[in-house]
Length: 463
Image (cartoon, rainbow, N blue to C red):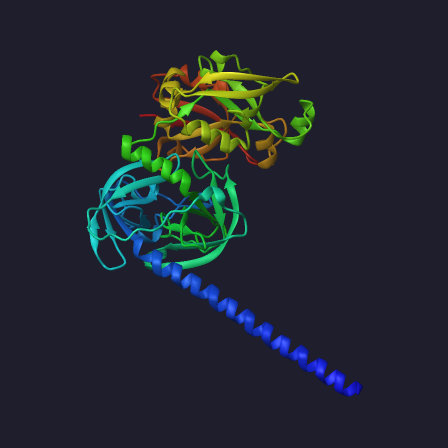
């Protein structure tokens, strides 16, 4: 009797195991069919973009963030020559609008688009926004396929992510991964960052292609990878489609993006800062400096104020707040809820156009543009992140334009500017005043600190 019971039980277990195995395989088959269907529906609207440009010299490859204007497509002949680049894009409307990346098409002399069905079109550049790395081009065709757009605000970490593009010129390539993170900022790719991070394989040539969800809807534009080799390492970044659509509308309407600013320098609240300011947590954004004659200064905002609310909602993360302010039309009234000496206040102010505010600040920004580099004020968090000495002061070089005057003089991102023409620059205000004092000069004498390698002088020839 016992042997019979054992035999029956074993048979049931084996049967159940077989059923479970069969069920799992069926699930995998269904998942595979879903990916195949997504690829079938999306790839006709994903285009290959080929650009030609006249350049004066070869540009070196950049820091770990490698954009996908593939160096393998660059000719190696020095001096002036024709440079050919390749990237991806996707058609979002039947009248031929195509979203891609700024670095794919910016400064191109000609843009050619190839569809999956073999049709080729000459494209016109509608507009670009280098500060978000978004570009819009247009082709004139009939029966153009389009891809469905999703909602990037609803993404959750762990969801499926499907990248489509033309890596290394291999058209209609589909890779699959997950959403690794959302809201990535301070990664040094663009001025306004709110990236989707994914481990779906992305390589040179994917840039500008769509990142899709499991429903086959576009949730982002593949833009950059983190790589020490120039190839795939499992960390890719995509611009959220919601942000891209806002930029697209502005480019169609105005041909450019006009941004707002309120005139403050901001810093995230660390646990140490929270303790110093008597805060219960790290929620909020610290104002470290208020620009003279700015909207914030006019409204009475002061350094040391902590923003905890924006238009009667929690302020959220620094990058998100900065992006929200920038996206507003100039002249928009906003309400900031701030903490000052433990007391909560509401302050109303009217945003100003970024261009006007920059012009009013003086000529220092034009000098930076002419020299080809950008900076930000050092703070305790940056010092900790870069493992710098605690007593270091100055302006951190965040970006240097390849081939520009500063680059040719040896200035590189990560260096710290301690003085300009022998004028100490321990704060942003001192730095901009020092630049203004050398207006009209052909040379810029910088004392730079190179982390772990000491200090030296660099002469940037502006002419």
